[in-house]
Length: 544
Image 1 (cartoon, helix red, strand yellow):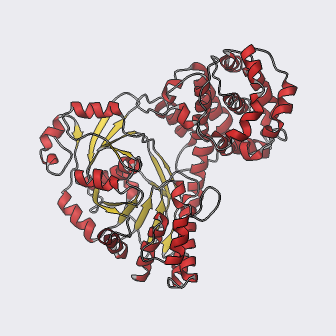
Image 2 (cartoon, rainbow, N blue to C red):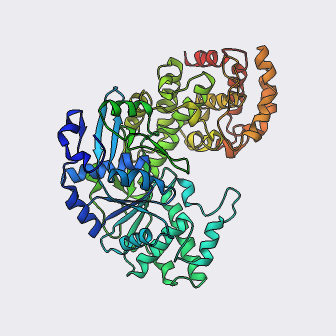
Image 3 (tube, rainbow, N blue to C red):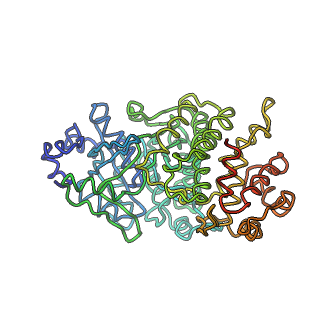
């Protein structure tokens, strides 16, 4: 069996080994889609293939939709050339459930793939045709947060962007410049309305996309390279909208154990492709069963009935509340907690940590006891139910090969939003006291202990990448000798040495000294320095 239009013609063979197949007439849907497209998505990666494509497939199966998806790839053209087109736009979704069962689905909702290459007249011409269509309702994006940035890490305008500003919209070189050029083509085709929907996992994502489009419109107009009315078009919410959204679904890279399952089913051509840009793609994607996509309902040209497929449409304020609920309390802080202590205690899989009595209790207290009381309920998702699912279904899922080492990346950039917001809420509430937070400071102490790059057994390990390592690691370096010797360290001495870190609001979101948390952090940190096994002993002592 092969994943292609020809191979899928033998439905019985696929169904016999447990695959769910599309229930619609692909030829009809493909014709409808190409003639009157409604949704084009930029970014042919795993989350798109596992989430948005499957939602559309379900709605096509139910007859709710009569048009499928068009996907465009602008970063790595080989994904389209070596994966989408050889498989006639089909993919396999393997849903890995926490109970150990799997679901196998052939997803065929992508009707056309495009390459976002302005130097390729055929490919780019087709994209311009799509953007000129009256029927087009939305262009969505999963291109990562940095995909919207016009500057490099030093704040300098990217070379390709600067060149596009002066060359105009005819053949831009930068990814975001090409998108702006296509939007300009829609403008000159009759100022047709469209929703530009970022679905990337970053805060206020629609604003990031808007800022990029607005910058291009203004530069091109200023340089006489585009109609000045294009600026008004980009800024007219009745013509072009940039909704906020919150997306949440774990889609790790294709796993070898899943490939083995599919091989056993007799499917040919499963070999993954590593492109010249080092993208790892395969004919299948593996993903968890849980998924959330909450979108601001701002679609000036209408939209498909995606709520019938489980997506949630609401106002901007509610999207913001959902994001804060997830990032500040119900998921991300728990992941960071497990990342820090997982590295210290020698774990290599996040799921295994949920079998650890102390770590399980620690994240339960941080989520339910410390975080939940100050969460603003967004209404569309219940915070307690969200945490229940995270702790009982999502994190313990043995199929999810997430590691504490990966999640520990950039922890210094995460603490402020993932824990600092809860501390601020306690400080601002009349009926709350920051002193009641006992275990958020334990995570801070654990992070400081983690920065020593020595695990709880006394073995050195490699710290995950983090832009502040060179800044913060020197402060804890002096405690290493005492750690090895198992020598107790005076809390006052710790506080004096760590003062510049403890008072850094950029790291923690608050000044730990000012809010009265510094002593608690230093006490925990001191106890974690008492030699081999001290991290575990500290957890046991306070979680007893």
